[in-house]
Image 1 (cartoon, rainbow, N blue to C red):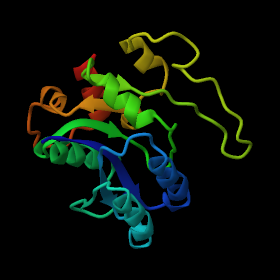
Image 2: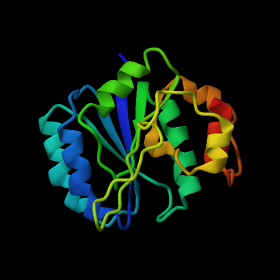
Image 3: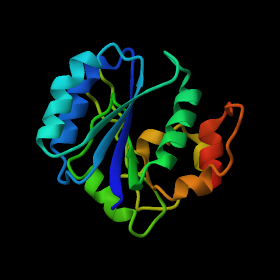
Length: 194
């Protein structure tokens, strides 16, 4: 049986945010997923065992995948991550940023939306970390609409952290084994799905 996955990258400097990140994973309304963490030489992986164990205690499998080199550029991390996930037996994938936290139903709603759509962009509410002041969200301020190329050019509103996707779509999006890592992985990715 194919499983659902929640994916994140551990990197140097993310440690102060991990408590909120893992707390928001623990309070998700669904626990029917595995966690995949790609370790880009985080200093906190040894310290994270307490969080990993809490996940395991709730029946969530945790996979830690080290990157081939330490402190890889984001482009290489994303290419490695996509290539790795293509080989796993997954059904649906929710990408996350490990310095973010999520609403209680984010994973459940993402998995449900993927029943009808190949790709789903999750809402994001940015805020100022010093004042905790929220800024208007791109998606919640208007009825759902399709994202067009102009949105990508005009705003920095989409990234892997806002994305949920049917795993089979990864082959359609990145069908080629590229010898050289593309310098615009995000643009290739989003260009493929639009």
